[in-house]
Each structure stands twice: as C-alpha cells, then as structure tokens.
Image (cartoon, rainbow, N blue to C red; front, side):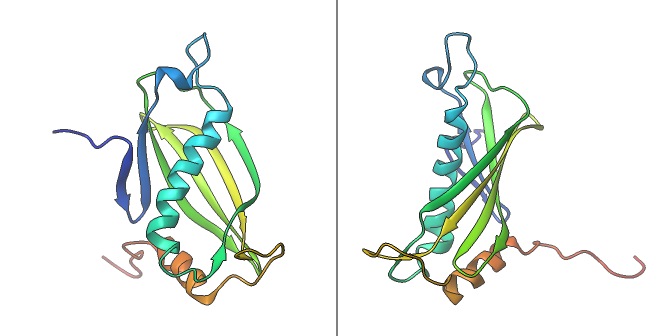
Length: 150
C-alpha cells in the first residue's frame, strides 16, 4: 500500500503527514529546530483551510505566541505525523496544540496562540461564534467513551 506523504491523513482527529527533507537538516543530519515551527505552521494552514476559513468571516487569525518542547530529533527521510487539537478558546484568542510524532515516538509539542483581528485593522476582535463552534466540533472525540457495563 502507498502511504500518503505531505498531506492530510486524517480529518478527525486532524493529522497531517510530512517527510523530512535533507534540506531541512543541519550538516550533522538533524532537523534544524526552527523547522519544527515550519512543519507546525504548514499543518495548521491545512487545518485552518478546512475547518476555519469557510466560517471565519472577514477576520484574520495571525499567530500571537508559540511555545515548543523538543523531545527527540528527526533525520532526513523520517516521516512525521502532526496532530492538531484545540486546547482552549478565549475571548479574542484560541490555542491549538501540534503534536509531532515519528515511528510512534513523540518528537515535539508546540502550542500556537492565535488572535482574531478584523482584516485591515490593527487590533483584536472576539472569536466568532462560528469559529468557536468549528473548533469545538474538531476537538470532539469520534467515538464517545461508553458508560456502564459492556
């Protein structure tokens, strides 16, 4: 079977897959730390275009802050799965988590804080209800846990 590379492999939960290129690495053959952000923003763009762009209205949602924890290296030819889930939704911002895994191992965890701004205006605006709803739907489990005896 041919595995999809450099694209979405699951919509719910959202997971994108990418293959590490030689050009992503330093001379020692390890991915440059900054490329983890690049991978995460690439996956978020796919997530955004599918879940948020159709419902966001006339606003932009730029990154306000980002934090990352690295736990393992990547090398050329590795594939990385990038899972995105909603962490929280505030008044004008929301946070999504990008978890990078390769061969079943955690590689990094990155949190992106995005802020809603009216297009063409410097300032914030409330997260639209439609965006809140899309983020909530995306983070719902596909199969709710069973309650009671089997």
